[in-house]
Length: 240
Image (cartoon, rainbow, N blue to C red; front, side, top):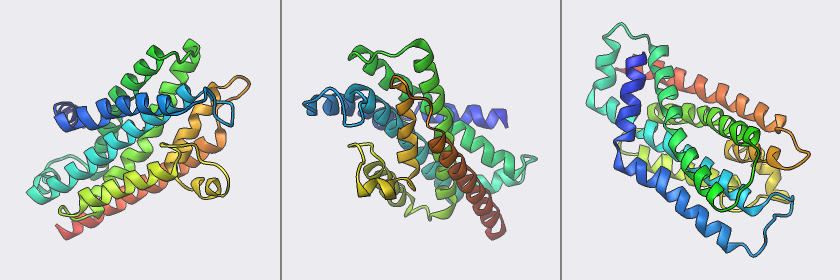
């Protein structure tokens, strides 16, 4: 399984599309958003530069795992590679976990680059806050890695790209990635894993701790998506 994870990570890092859309693009969008606002703090008191540093890091992380794992799995199903792996001694659960773990690892460059840009633009956090925020965002990315695996087995190869992009953009739009969610819209956003993912930024404010409700919600989504990924993998096995 370790060999599979290493192979998946190397394949992703060599992909120029990954480097452009999940690392460079979020960093460029960060510059756009922090200069588009004519205030330094949002309504909740969180600095604009800190808020969008987190939202663009989550945007890159979610993009890395959704577009990467879902499309790759779909193509592997189409080419027969998954069928070949089933003939080896690799258990199905190891294959599924390996895909999720490898996808989550590929979010680290996206998070690190946006953090570096944020620091260069004046985002000031303590060492503990930087480390805690990076750890929270990386662990949170497992939720979307599991969703990516599930979509890879659920969608047909010809439709997976469209389904992933619609899912990706809809969750970002309604999850506070492009702008803070408030009012009646926030009631519905609580059922969006991207919204909960972005809520992890609130503990960087003075007097605030990690949002345990958001953590619990993400944990629940992880269970749902991982269970769905495993079930869809078994269904694909029966159909093969």
